Length: 164
Length: 73
Picture 1 (tube, rainbow over the protein chains, first blue to last red):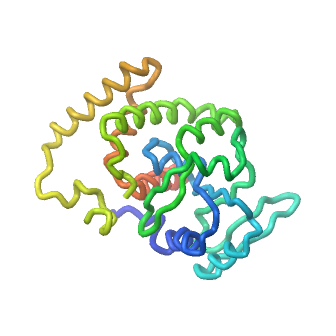
Picture 2 (cartoon, rainbow over the protein chains, first blue to last red):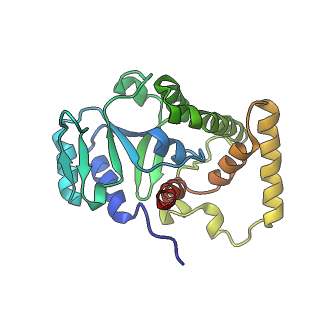
């Protein structure tokens, strides 16, 4: 049986629109770790925006048929719609500096037709350490081993453009 | 060309090293990582090396798919 399609063109289109409209954002969390090679499992793709009030985010959503659902006292802000269902909004990153400062610790990674800023694995580990939830403590050894592996392979094969 | 097609360079090469040779190269890399990081776990290092042979989008898809599959159980 063929594997079900996931993160298809329609879902990639949102990232493309955000990039085209020059929205300041980065991918963080385990999706970011996975993109860099960490063998982690994630249910969604965490997006950290410099300014969630940026009108261009709504414009990007309009282009892909997505919706922004503002936060309520009981619920966080959400994206809704098939093309954006995989994306989660991150409001706070434990243990990290400001968006602008962390931007220096990002790398551009090609996702489909778009190159997107992705928080470095080292900084993801710093965030997980600071958050220190049970699920963070479980994944930290995996991320740390992945980082050690990345450092080793990058030392042997410096910047060969693996971010296709 | 691989970047334009959004595929791994290895997928468009006419000749690929035999799987055993590739595995041996990966094993050597894993051994080096483990020697320099005594606290590291072989499985974590090995799976990272396997994923580094894939494109970032393939890695992400694999991760999302596993989460979705896990939800079924």
